[in-house]
Image (cartoon, rainbow, N blue to C red; front, side, top):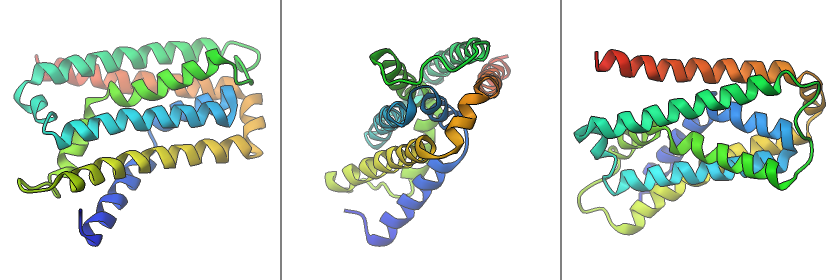
Length: 210
C-alpha cells in the first residue's frame, strides 16, 4: 500500500484533475439538465469507469504504447474528436427545441447518459497520458499489487464521487429550473465548447503530422 503522504498527494491531484472545468463537466451538466440528477449520476458513474480503465491500463504500462506507437494515440484522438463533433451536433439540434428533450428518467435518456459519460472519458487518450505522468511519481518496479489497485481505485472513486456530487447538487438546486427554462443557451454553449475542443484535437493532429 502507498504511504499516507503519497495516498493524500495522489488523492489531491486526482481531485484537482476532476474538478477542472472541461468537456466532462459539460456532459454531466447536460444530462442532469435533460434527465435530472439520476441521469447525471449515471453519466458520472460511467465516466468514472472510463477513467478507471485508463488508470488500470497505465498501471499495467499499457499507456506506454502511446509513446512507442503514436499511431495508436492518433486513432483514439480521431475517434474522440469525431465523438465530440457528434455530441456538439446533438446539443445544437437540442437547442432548437422549445424545451429540453426530456425531463424524465426513461430508459433512452439513461442509456444516452451512460454512453456519453463513458465515451467522453474512454475516447480521450489524454486521460491515459495524464495518469502516465501522475502515476510515474508513485510507481516502482517492486511495487505490490495492492498499491497498484489502490492507485486505480483512488482515481476512479474520486472522479466518480466528484461528478456524482455535481449531478446531485445541480439536480436539487433552484438553478436547474432556470437552466431548463434557458436550456437553449446551455445546449449552444455545450455545442460550442465541444466543437472547439474537437477542432483543437484535429488541428493538433494535422500540425503534428504535417
